[in-house]
Length: 227
Image 1 (tube, rainbow, N blue to C red):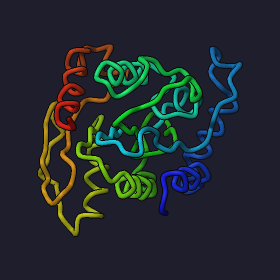
Image 2 (image 1 turned 45 degrees about the vertical axis):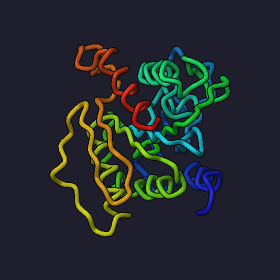
Image 3 (image 1 turned 180 degrees about the horizontal axis):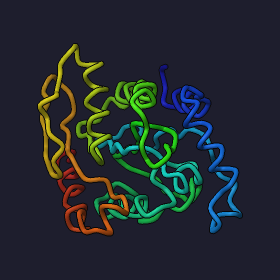
Image 4 (image 1 turned 180 degrees about the vertical axis):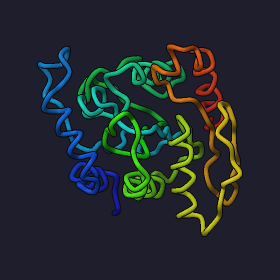
């Protein structure tokens, strides 16, 4: 795989995980009542953003009625609202909202992706599904040559990213690294620094586990780190 465009095509046509593909097709067919007028995307989702990004943001997976509906990662749900707004406020995006894949959003210096490309039931991919999807993240890491900071959103994204780089960094293991909101890890060996955040899911934002100022501070740190 030599380009992000080629990788995008391979991800969109992926059928590696029967359970996830069946679930996504069912969601796209049944739809949520408020989105009955939408033609759901329904397919696996590639990452999006600036090919020369210095910041790589990694989430868990598309939301069933967010990214799976709109065709863009972190778009069309409350998590996407939080991400779009903070990317805009820290100078990584040209607008503070993202409601559809053709709404004019453009990222500058940032790229957004996930460890799993299909919406999983209950937001819980199983172990095999995660392993089947990680090669796509590994390929993105190779193609996004200027990334200097990786921002992981949530524990599964954190652990998935560490597995991905174990595969590419000659047997190095990072099992002692802990998922702690606000942690910054320098793994050495020419790999990007890793910045850790809670995921901006409703479960975290509505309970106050993740407050807006905490969230914004993470991205201000990311901005400072990438320059």
